[in-house]
Length: 294
Image (cartoon, rainbow, N blue to C red; front, side):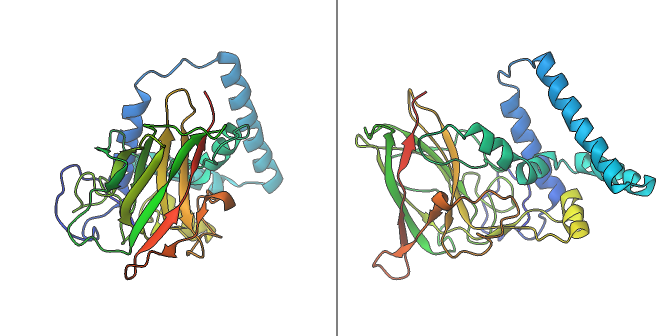
């Protein structure tokens, strides 16, 4: 499903009426700029020179090997301009590039696997107790899900008061603050673990969703013959004092697109196995987080 921006929506609509790639891109760009402006170190000149030179050299090599024509070059130029006008650079980079950056960043991690953050993170979600229900609409559509586990250090010691920021799409594949007619913090929260590092989060099982297809990234999908789908997942940022934050996504075994994620972000260690909870059609899953020391 495509997403679009809203800051104050409190209705119960499905989000289909006015969702556009441009609005979603503008919201993602605004969120990124807001976080980027708070204390970014200056660039190392030699590092910039090395990386940009190698990027350009690789581009030049592709042009030569594939004998790129002026018609193709001008189509690329027009598309790059359109990505900027649609505000879709966060989407493009998060879908097709970030998984490799994360792979490099996490290659020495001993604890839990990380994966991409994606474009729909919003900081400062409401703080919730260790046993919490995520903010949601009355009669929120979807299968009820109990997500529980513990947060420990690599030596096995529990991390009391660990923070688990969690955000997810709803049962129709929409994210609050990026789709119309959703409450601002719908299915978003910051859960504070108890003294044993344990948490219990009551939510609903999210749906797979399509990345926006009516903007420049959608044009790329069509031109390349790629599908636009991401598998259903829970997003998390888990942290504790003196330990490294891990950003991750948890998927669902046998879910659609788990084996064919457009963002290439699924890892075997991040696949959950939902079980019936014994109360109707409800599901429950357990996943423990292990954090590396800072």
